[in-house]
Amino acid sequence: MTLYVYGIVGSPSFDAALSGHEEAGVFAVPCGDLAAAVSELSRDVAPEPQNVWRHEQVLEALMQQHAVLPLRFGTHVARRDALCDALRRIRPALTRDLERLSGRVEFALRVTNVGANDNLVLAAGSKVDGAQPLRPGTGYLRARAELLRERTVREAAARRIEAMLRQHLDPSAEDAVWELAEGQAKTLTASYLVERAHISRFVDAIDHVRDRHLELDVTCTGPWAPYSFVTVRPGETWR
Image (cartoon, rainbow, N blue to C red; front, side):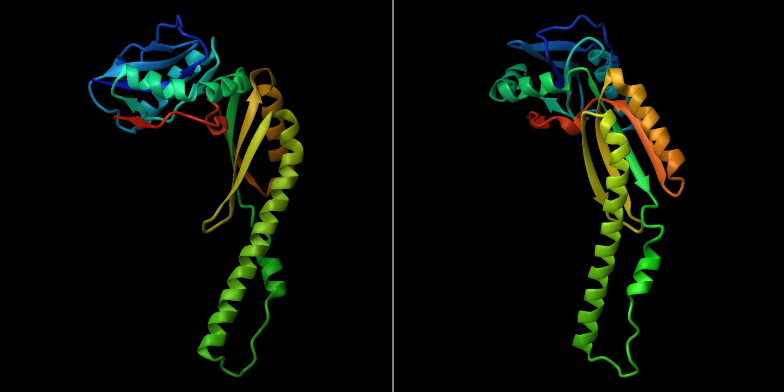
């Protein structure tokens, strides 16, 4: 048997009658004034959509009554004493996170098509080489320099879009983490920490951005448990 850990609860117990993976009951493993929400399972849980969703459902139910620090899907521990020892070692940090994230949820933002107008900028800055063939070394260095210039132009354009979007979204949130994803087309991703009482205000801000910037493809999912804003978590596997 193994203990599957959903998250850390800011209370030594909870009353919710919850069903977790494999329809197993969810119960508290107390450690001082905190507790881990766990299910006792006979095997590891496959990373399938229905299982990931069950993990989220358990966390959301717990968050209705308690401050909760979510753990990543697939967190297991073999023994209760090992779990309590791990929590005890980082208890002060867990307590700080529980206080900071209580009553708050996370929204995930994805913005694509951020480089729609970059080609015009790149073309304007390109130079046509003369008729004389380039030496192999010179051609390589020029190609590298051109790739670097293109990347710099695209990243600068993406960061300008990020700054513009944050003017609309940040006032409705507690915190935000933005990243620039590399790929065939530039994509901005963000995680926003939002108070439950301000969810509707944040959603309105997202709708405002979509209406105002039709050239961008803006998707938003949530609310989720605030994974991206947990500063410390026990190891994902204790075996």
